[in-house]
Image (cartoon, rainbow, N blue to C red; front, side):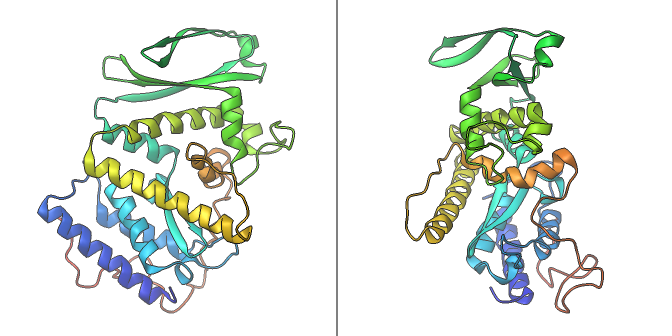
Length: 314
């Protein structure tokens, strides 16, 4: 892209375009969601975000991919300041990836009947039964003991989406093998070559939490992919497809056109490295800390005018 001035112009263009879409009724934001604040948060975060080569993303990614990533964030009603999404650079392309929290928020927006999303791990020694109804797995029975919970040997996990009366709207069940298959595609490599959870990783220290996140992400993605809400679902699927294509293109370049192994269902795990910091309070997001001296002279910091004379949201 070149410099922050050009990036700022791209951000202003996105702000203007989204304002026009809102005035025409082409887009509707969630209650208490401020697109202007989300853009400002994204701007501050992006200035300190680097790619895997430790280069500032705003100096390397294309203006088009920056605009698409920001539009994807706004249309889905996500706020990076609330850890609902992350910006990840794949080569010259920037992608907006929904986080665990973002997936939950967006699924609830797609289907307003969803009041709560809960997940549970099935450990060795649990009494657990499933049944198939209308082609979908349903949890028929799950009983735990303190001993089974302490076994730290997972067998499966499930996610339930509940309405206000705690009726089950949807159920997602994943076996331990399916969960490990997803983790194998994670860029942080939480599994050894033998398929065992690597000691010292977040997946090892907080195994139950990470298993729940995986099955919740899968359940939320199913809601998004089967939604009838035209512009919301289309925007989410398009954002996912663009991010997947960017990662594939990067891997093809790195492997000089060789065979790569990545699937749609496993792609969510590429956000894992960015979400680990939420679990263990460590800064592993790939973003360097702000320069205490203020950074570059053309940087726009908090309190400065990012939007120029572009119209403000009401």
